[in-house]
Image (cartoon, rainbow, N blue to C red):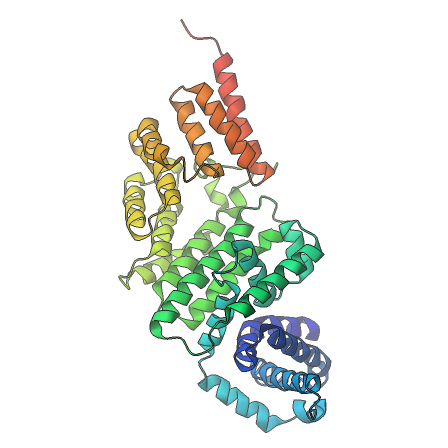
Length: 419
């Protein structure tokens, strides 16, 4: 690995921890980000010549902190700090800050950083964009391409998000155990939003497809910081199980391949094995939560060698438990798929009909309803549901999948009835 490649990797790995510490110090997201960027520039200039420091993260925090102080003083027209060589080559100071970093509650620094990015005042799209920009370090250009908007529009979106966060006044004190648990829940939700933004992409070359890998990286980071949290284990297990199916989810023509029709030999077995081990460890804590239950459902699918081997009874029990833990019309909609497997399309249709008002703008609701009506022979109503699903599709692949259902229905209707 070249010096520059190693430095890029070191800077990316250190970013959440260093930026979180700088944010705690300056209590201003823009100042912390500018300080970290300046520290990175100095690292690129000095590390190839002088060699990497013993602790790159501590070095970045130390240099970034002093750079930030220098910038604040200059803005205040106060005395500047000593020159760069004096700061960068102070071995004892670097060692001291490394020790203080080890003694500090750096877990809360990173948790606070992520919590700021997923502040409840921000809509989901701004949460994702802010997390990818601040925590993951993706450029505005990369994020804009992924969201199919202009760079200026994305820059404005991120700027507005920062302004709303600053106005909200996020507390910087070390959170209590109750607050930490609440923040972990919110952060986990944001990480899963990032994952799904990438997972929905058919084309692996699409900018957003990499978001899934970034979400998994963030989940690994959180689990490293909070290794005894079963819901973090469940979240990582769920994402690994879902991403393990990525090679089989779309055909060569970028058409959606349903789970029951996927070539299971294409599933990533190492991801599945890691996820199953994580899930077993999580369940031993006997504190089941939504992510653990969803991961357990995905695990049943992953253990079935063939679609017909799927244990639908066990999946139904897990969905019922999920409905109790996290009541949601989307959870009920997913359980309706299981009900159709166990008890037929009519019972599943009866289950989802009351959800029409809440899920009227949801693509999957109309897609499933159309499929159930088709099975029952109500082709006219099925066509209406399919047309509504196409209008709500988020991608060309989703729309194409529904159109194929319509084409099949029309072909079946055109076939002569056997006498």
